Amino acid sequence: MRALKALFAGFDMWLFGTALVLSLLGLMTMYSYLGDNLYFERQVIWIGVSFFFLVIAAIPDYRFLRTGNAVFYIYMATIAVLAAVLVFGTVVKGAQSRFDFGFFALQPSDPAKLVLIMVLAKYFSKRHVEIADIRHIIISGLYAFFIFALVFIQPDFGSAIILFSVWFGLVLVAGISWRHVGAVFLLGVLSFSGLWFFGFQEYQKDRIRTFLHPLADIQGTGYNAYQSTIAVGSGELLGKGIGYGTQSKLEFLPEYETDFIFAAFAEEWGFIGALLVFLLFALLVWKILFRALDGETNFERLFGTGLAILITTHFFVHIGMNIGLLPVTGTTVPFLSYGGSHLITECIGIGMLIGMTKRKKRVIIEHDQ
Image (cartoon, rainbow, N blue to C red; front, top):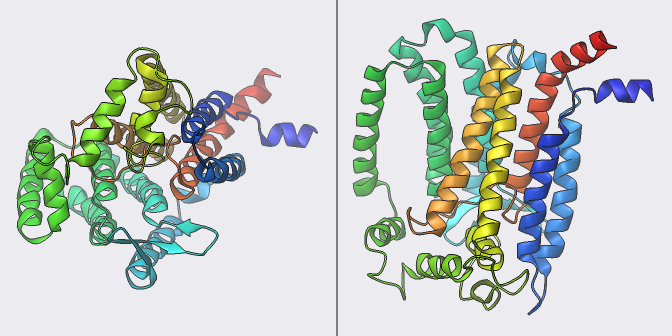
């Protein structure tokens, strides 16, 4: 019993509990009184599996990631898997982004985001005092680019945006000069211009055009965004009640379990429920950053910061997409949306952060005793 207590000393129940509450809110949004509940039933299993992985991921001592080549090998394996999905993956809605194993599907772009955080955290932690040197921005950008490119050509524009945001956010946190920020911004503008003419598929261009002119084609490319804003607005103050969202449950709003779950949630829970979700995500990100700042080295601090950037970017891109402020990119929201790949990845990320920082917590607890 004492050994088990020592093993989980420093386990953060606030992080665990907040993530679990968000997952349960998403689960309730998938429930319907009007038809079958296949997504609801499957998500119950995914939540159980994911939070089991969270607990397991909190056990190891992750100091081995700071030194040696483990992170590099994990990165290379990730590149290989992302390349393999372009050859052997299943095409779903025009994107070849997952392996279909029958009883479940694996989307490698989700764990790839966590791997990128590990790679950048290790790289910047080793070169923190030299970060003003532009070559470190270029090298770190190359690490991000290989993952970004393989995800983009699937094509998965939403995940590609998230990957770029993680890299850029960690570069800023690591201490890039404003002169270099300007250079990165200019490069981003040039890259977007190149992608518009040579990289984007026509449907991706249509989504951006719809974002600029949302009412131009509400029966075509603008349909999803239009129905999403209707769902959010129809929730009013207190919502229509759990399982009674007419826009989602009557299938006016497509993909309400994944890409538009915030809109479905807002319809059923109203403004008060939406405010609750914002507060829970704020608490989750604050606890992640607080935990990161308690890390022993810059590696743990940068890993935790990268995890916070990942969750925050996912959240705001998804919300913006659901209320018509951003183009529809098929981006899930952490913990709320249906799916196993992203939920397991998020839970493992939180578990790893707890595992990285619990040693210091355990030393403090043992000292106090």
